[in-house]
Amino acid sequence: MPATAAALVLGIVATPLLGLEGHGVSTVGEVPTTFPLPELPSVSVSDLSRIAFGAAGIVFLALAESIGAARSLATRGGYTIDPDQELVALGVRIAALKRAAL
Image (cartoon, rainbow, N blue to C red; front, top):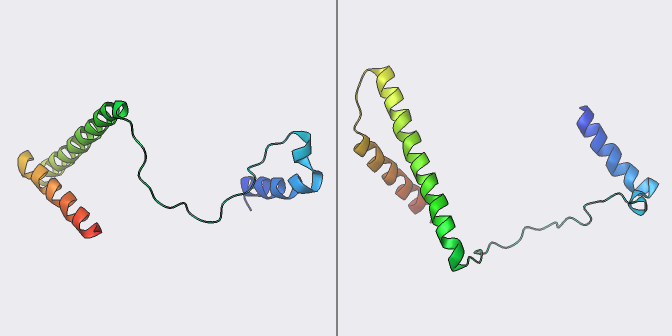
């Protein structure tokens, strides 16, 4: 057993036996045994601009990564790519995945 797992088990066993909560040791307490129901988060209008800027940054990073990987493979394979075609293919793939998830 790795040392970290042994320390975890030792802590779990020692806490109630030695009454460590009474000596100021913090514990997690009750852990829920069920998953919470999914729900949409409440977002204020003022938060939408920050969310939009973050989403735009993620989109640009994903596009740059996709084109970069395609160019790298094309260079290694000795052929050329059309970046527009690559981005259309990426969009079609995402749309197909969303449709399959429904």
